[in-house]
Length: 248
Image (cartoon, rainbow, N blue to C red; front, side, top):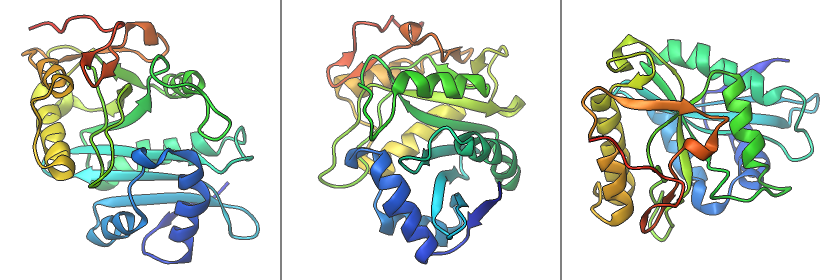
């Protein structure tokens, strides 16, 4: 199984977007193809794929680097419909955890994952319960935050009910204990993310709950991904019924 890093725009990148990413994510969770091209050109976006014998992508991973915070976001990890279960997702995840983290010198690797309490499974988009178990098997843990994805482009909608997962972190991103993530790099990362996408960090109930969850001097707790009942659930009105108050 050979992994190919896509270093420039062209037919392979187009096929990754059209044949792997578009069928795997709802429109509001997905950036545009042009945005993906711009990210690769800037050097802040990495794309990796596994091709079949005919040169068509079987699976793909996309990572977005934040040089100001030292955080790398695994924005997308998907397998082409009909090809799941072949180990392609695990291979690409390992590639991100090793090659991409080393490439950028990232202090933390994060990922956005659908909360099983906020999203139903489907044949096209997969099973959120299976997905959190997948990331848990490979060391992922959930930040204790009522997380949601900001609107990625004008006219798009936020995606509530997401988990911000930690897939790896070093000492620079660790809080006062091994089960805590340092607040300041995380706060800077989220502020940058929201300002880039929505223009500001936001003060609505959902955003206020997210920022309140960062009010922890020792760090944000890391929770087991395979125990989603313990992970806060965001809604547009603030934390959902599964959420518990953040420690101040």
